[in-house]
Image 1 (cartoon, rainbow, N blue to C red):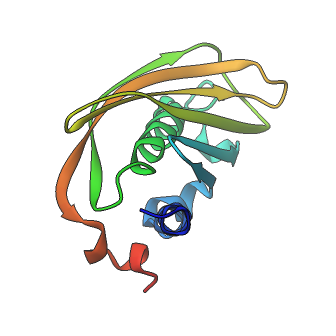
Image 2 (image 1 turned 45 degrees about the vertical axis):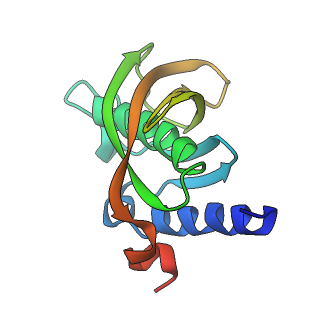
Length: 149
């Protein structure tokens, strides 16, 4: 792929992410580069569990999405799937903006390994994780949001 094709792929992935129905609820933002993805979202009370801090699903989503799209930045023909994900919780969060930084750590054939770290506004680590991602058989060209439809 040429540099312009690669950039176009990253912008299409950002559009794909923005158009995912689940993101209508969470309202995150994303920026994708080669082997990296940054996500951000503002903490809201409707993300809380009964003890008034964000539920683990928010940590999971940020880690999975950041690591997933870091991998997807390097796979331009098919959709990627999460095969395994480990989430580590460092501290509870009750307010502010969270940013997850994902990066590819290695590749082995169809399998990609990536990690992500979630930081709060003070740049403190609130969570981290790593995962294994695999190439699917789903062509990106068949996904309307990727194609711009």
